Length: 113
Length: 114
Image 1 (cartoon, rainbow over the protein chains, first blue to last red):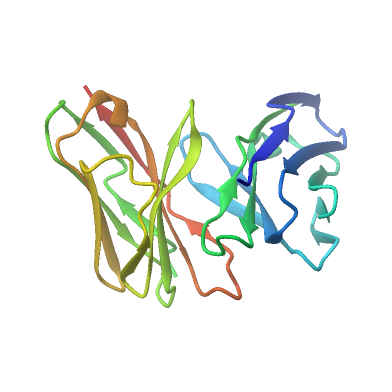
Image 2: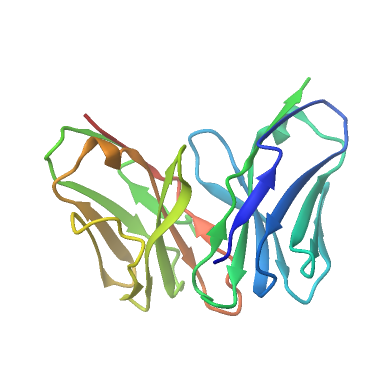
């Protein structure tokens, strides 16, 4: 059974710092991995989608990497800003159940001005 | 496009009452998903539809929960009777097709059952 974990559960950094969020999954048989952002009281916003054949995706200050063989993905945020404060969730799409995405518990990020 | 639309945004009801949550997916999206989010269990898939047909409802917690999708632009999630442990945020999401498979989420409905 696919399980997704995220470490740390919470992170607080000063503004301007570069940071890395981690996502781990137990079964490497996945189609893709997606990173989401969730603001308090709001829905999820898709940030980056990495297909299983890809190693990384970039969007602005965000860079997501995927190492399928080791069951790991990282989300790198450069020059963090207070507006980056949110919960970040990763989700994998397993090959055993294509239409059912498995979400991690999320990392709550606070960027201190 | 306005994105995925959910209503109501907040619902407070008393135990035993019927609750109906509504969702309008993004036009042209063939898949629709209902999720529930709680602090204890995180984000859980309840049920999903493809072309208005329920494909997998194994995540529906009990018979008190039911979902319908009468057409491509509307879906409902009903809880009858509601219980305090049903209190959570319920999200609807849609995706265009299996190839694109990027999910777009609605703003959610925060349900409180007293």
